[in-house]
Amino acid sequence: TQAQTIPDAGALMRQTEQALRFDQMQRNAQRRESLPPAMVFDDATRVTAARIKFVGAKRLSDDLLQTAAKPYLDRPLTQHDLQRLTEAIADAYRQAGWLVQVYIPRQDLATPELTLQVIESIPSSKPTR
Image (tube, rainbow, N blue to C red; front, side, top):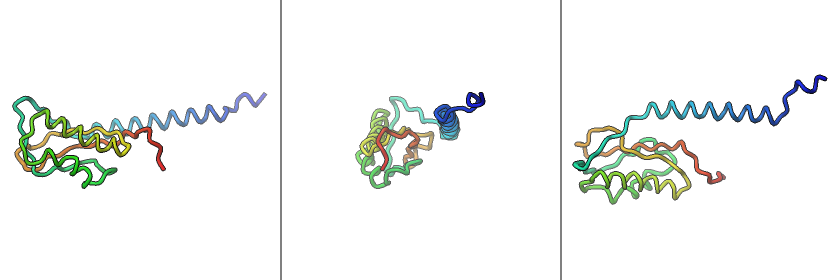
């Protein structure tokens, strides 16, 4: 019988979903590889930023992110303060329904601008409208 050789729609759908998931994982891995490496801090770290620049942040407005970062401006920050800063930015996203990774990439810390890298490629379980 010829009917046995035709794959059912469910099997085709699962194969397509697996291929799409694999393709997305490959793209995310390539994107991560192209990101700058993280800065390494220690107990002696002191960073004072007059401005914060957010790289990779598209889903939240710069105003909203600047408001979340404001308590960390114009004062010496320790490695623990810098950790709390990245957590504050991730939390601003979380409150808007997004899960992200935030880190401080390698950079010249002598400048008045501190750059934070935001990775927005992690969708939350929040339904989109």
